[in-house]
Length: 73
Image (cartoon, rainbow, N blue to C red; front, side, top):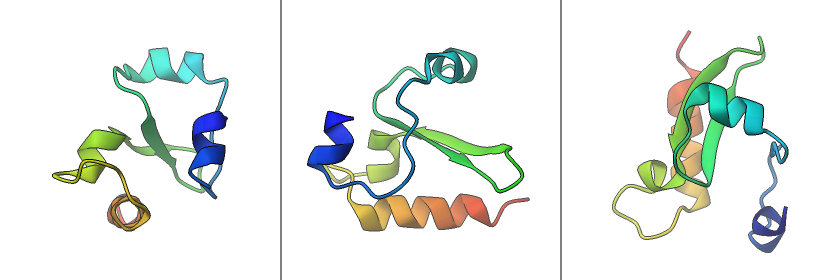
C-alpha cells in the first residue's frame, strides 16, 4: 500500500494476493497482473521487464504494456 501511495498509482492494486502470487509463479516484486473484463489473466510481468532499459517503471511504459496485452484475445 505504501509503494502505491508514494507513487500515486491510480489503478486497482491487489495487496493481499499471496495466493495469486504463488499460483502465477511470481518471483519479482512489484509485478503487474493484467486481468481482462472477463476475469481472465491476460499478462503477468515484473516491473523491471515492463520498464525495459529504464531504471524505473514510468506510467507511459506501463500504459503501453497494458495496451499491448489488452488487444490479445
